[in-house]
Image 1 (tube, rainbow, N blue to C red):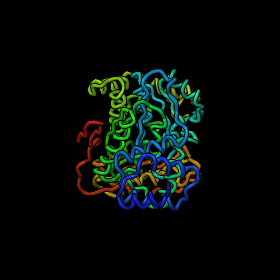
Image 2 (tube, rainbow, N blue to C red):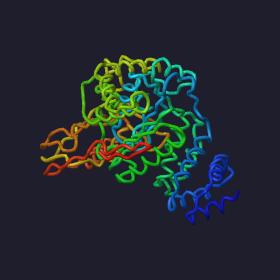
Image 3 (cartoon, helix red, strand yellow):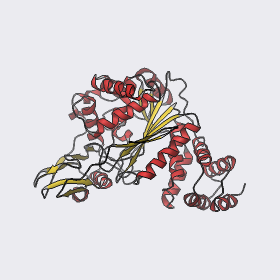
Image 4 (cartoon, rainbow, N blue to C red):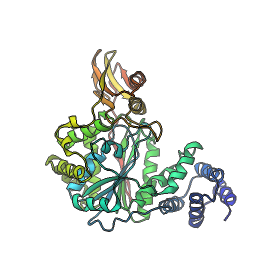
Length: 440
């Protein structure tokens, strides 16, 4: 096969065969095809798109480019959950123990944060002693014993995605739904679960800011999962404001614990229950109302909290943090951010809230950046809330390396205050399954 011929055909809007797609993916991973030819093909895909068959073929070629995780020794039905990323999105720390408490096996491989979005592994590693670098044997053992384990992605899991994403990032070819869908789903398929629940974010703090684009991405990913025999469902949810009130690693762990203990509600709790219910619906409870009742019962009864404690202990973490949050990393200083006017919170520049947390040290601007697990932001207001002059909008948690001035400037500009309250967006816009798209 010749790469220039494949580029020319895709440039003309013609489809590539499964064999051709597998060939160029494998050849690129092996270093046979140069960056400039793959970049040209990616740009052609951006302009011309891919058919459902092509997108599935690309996904499977990427999934098989490295290790494929074997979860066959885990007893029971395995469900994975994935979010496309956002700010103050701590649902994994709540939804997965809820699902595990109901009998679902959750063998979750998670990534680290980069930029304004937080990573689940970073949050869990803020717990003293927590080990997210599990061997395959230990990972499987914990899931069989506890029902839930979270580990970082292995070094050779989907190497094609690592190589292609790095190239897309510097060639303006990130914003292509077939390329995004294949990137996400190749990792989920390689991770070995029987079913996949997707949380596709839309809004200011999401990758897919346009609602229709978010539904299209959800549809394509569900189609891919279903085509390869994975029960797959997606919720399209709001990220036009931070999901929770905590932004930052140990702060988000504390907020997740407050939800698991039944001490706080709001959007984070509501969405976590909905996602847990979807995890049950694709595995144990086909009747969604029954699945939701089971998820709520696991949370209210404390069984989900106990499951989270079991996971922390099994992975070497200090579970005493659940009773004494002061054992989590603590900031060197706290800075109040006060309102300079009366009015209503009309909205957020959600991505900017995430950037403010990065300035404080809670996130990474580059992969090699070291995190300050104690750094972050505790918000005191949500969109629609009334504020008065001098009232606290947020508290910044800072350390020695924090750029407090830049963080405060960014955060203030990210909280929009107007003279009149505005209508709020729904938390969930709809559900996509293999058979239908429901608009809520």
